[in-house]
Amino acid sequence: MARTRVRFASLLALSAALTALAAGCGNGGGDSDTASKDGTAGRHGGSPVVVVTTTWEGAFAKAAGAQDVKVIVPQSVHHAPDYDPKPSDLAAVGKADFVLYAPFEPYAAKIKEAAGSKAELVEVDLDNDADKVKAEVARLGRLFGTEESAARWTATFDAAYAKLSKEVQDARPGGTSPAVVSQVFTTWSAKLAGAAPVGTYGPEAVTPAQLAELSGKKPSLVLDNAHMSTGTVLPDSGARQIEIVNYPGADLDLLTVYRNAAAELEKAMGGS
Image (cartoon, rainbow, N blue to C red; front, side, top):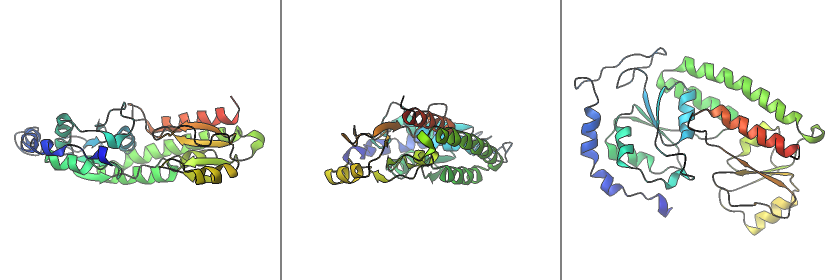
């Protein structure tokens, strides 16, 4: 999209200066690697320095065991691909061991190129489906050398997810699975509720034909994407719409995303 074509020409002019800045961050002009408690050796000493485009990637990195995580896109930016990177962002990338991004964030590779960074660029599958999350956390743990931390987080996640899922399913009226229509990036929350979506939509706005088709399935819930909402998805259908938040907060706690979703689902199914 046009808005994501950020102004990299001027940023490229800063490349030499930023590269020099990154080089100056070494210890005596050489790499002095120090292993972390998980066996990680960062280029700048200690645990790896991880720069992420958003809090979503940041939460994956933290879950995998990264301790030094820098987030580029502020939480106030509702749609991450619209963000225009600043010179300070490039300076942060210049100091990184790893840069994490999602494929729908087209500026990420350009950020690394403009900064002249030696960081490893890592594409992350941003999907809060529980199985996909665990697979990505394990993969990142192997990359960072923090497998033990990633495994501990996964054990905590499994226990918390099972508890939340049970609570949500216990709140279902009559114990039956509700008919759910979900935005394509919120199907994970339907799974949390033990419901298989009867239909999905997005990321584009719902067309008249889709509206008729989805309304005809008589859903009781619409699980909309809070970050890409286009308003009421199925007006006059009688379905209750709730907004599902995919991005964690500044604390990079991914479990909070599931807790919040569970609370919204319980409230909606309870009629409150």
